[in-house]
Length: 220
Length: 309
Image (tube, rainbow over all chains, first blue to last red; front, side, top):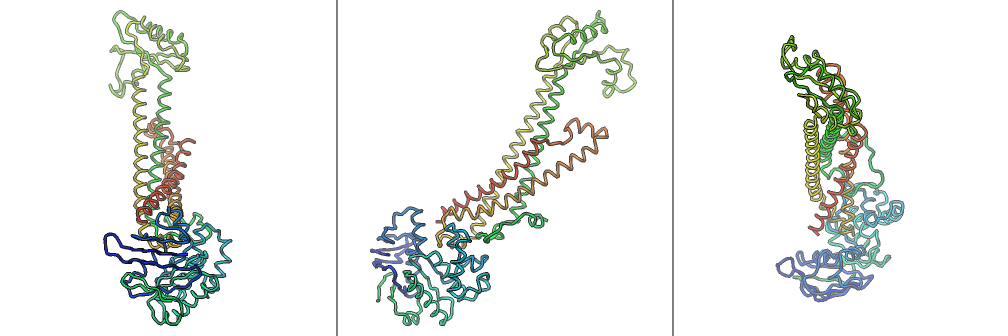
């Protein structure tokens, strides 16, 4: 599903942030992406999200080399990738329901069509009662569950999460990772979850992609 | 005030707009577009009024020519006047011809020479007013030729005056169109700045939309929707204000027309009635301004996204 071959990344004329990354991710797998702050986790996630192009090497996603894709094709591929951020990035003026429905609205679906799916998903992540609340009225955990729901509502093939537990307490962190695990198990979604919380890594027995000084090693 | 009027305009139903209404410098831009629409509508209305009046003046003047007979020694003025009237009446296309009496000539000269003047003591040129039935078919050249038989007679078709009038009206119309173009350019620039400001303010929304797979076209459409709404509201408010302005001016002029000064205004500008063409022109300001706003914002957003992506 995802294959990196000798991928390097540098910003402008600066030093290489990522060096010689070669790995593959199988469909339906779950990986933790870990490493110290500044190791390049977010940069790797941006490569996976197709919002950056590698300085060298080859990135293959869904069977296509992404380096020479047109803007339209990139956009189509990006729609197969969901993203969850540490800082939630919900739109403050939209309700929980409207935030979660946003990817379907972008795809041009009418509200009458997506309402049952969004409602069902919100109930599944435990936000059935908070559908009409604005993000400012949600707790950190609720915001992150809404962000996860928004990332998966369009059923992407790959779900990326950039420190999704960074702004919640340890107990809630564990419950959120359970939610990702459930999405992986029930929907067969390929998940790459970036975190530097070691207790979480120890609690869940998933392969780890360890980034250190721009180099990647995988520990099964 | 503007907010109260805006409340009367039906709001868009359905899902909340992705670009928040308050994040686009809405109130300031609405006021600016309202002012621009008002200026456009007033300029357009003014141009229509001037053109209508010029056409009316030109038509009135064109339906009349004047024969002037200068006193010539050895010639009998009254006889020459009768001949001139007779020649005019027998010319094809002439409706009527009438010699201006000495008393009427005296009244015409009174503003310059003062009252109580006895014109019988001075020999002054006399006039024959010739009304044309159809200026296009009247044989003016034939009349001018025939008048050659009367010593001291000449024909004034007011052509120079009409030419000057048409030139003046044309200048005003062209100036009005130039002002409209400048107003349009200023509006476009203001919308470009407002759109770029809105894009910068809503950068987070643009990023999120990109991350969830929104195309530049979709994002531009969302911003365009907001600006189209502001453009429509501003256009409508400005145009309604302009129509009220013309109605007020028309009413005020109508009140004045009973007085002598009012009559002068009436002669110069008619009764400030825009007519159907004027009203259609003013009403067209609304869709034109709205379309200008929407297209400008769309192009600006697409450029902004192309620069930043």
